[in-house]
Image (cartoon, rainbow, N blue to C red):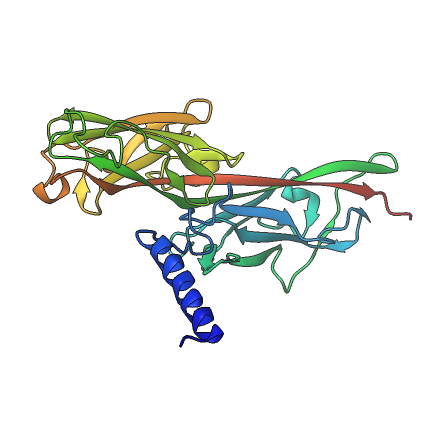
Length: 321
């Protein structure tokens, strides 16, 4: 004879079986922390700022002083020799100081990029630069008319930099035909690229099928860093670059890691900080990329020189005799 406990056990088993049957066909997914973004992001490359107290906001003629600058890599491209930044100080003539300093320096050390480790953002490299050198000092000896003079020191850094951006292209065996069956991606249209932290961004990549097995992308570039872009071809410093080579970047676009487009270090001019270029595959895409419909990475690389600036207001008082 069945006991009360037997009925309880049967009831529990029935409930467990019912719960199990309700789970059939369902999938659970775990999204890793930080998923959805390929880069740390940000709108800066190298930045400059004046070291507090170098110089003081206010000082007297004849006082010993230094000009100290903090150089930080806030973007996702590393600076390595021999691609050295040039750092300048201006706003006040070097002849106003004794001994007369050289207000331009070639920075020859490496500066690591910003990195992501797991969910942690690791800051990039930073260093200080002093005018004159760390073992020297200078004095402001120019004539001050009246009791004081207000001046503005400027600083600038000219450096080579690179922006990486990625998007997912949608490829199929016939790029001119409509998708049959379930649509996993759209063959044409905006691909919403993700752009690495840098002062120049890839803001748009529109896929444009140009043949049954050929494709193009209309790529938009934008200067978001508040500085100035220059052609990477020029060997002189940014301040001496001819006007024709200013506001220039080079664009390279590759599909699937090794399928080139006709954009290989292609010059693109930025007008009012923005530029557009269309990159096409000159030949038919490889068969393995267009078998069925698939999403394939599009990598866009933008190379350029960039100049960032900083300012500091100072007051120079006439020393009492």
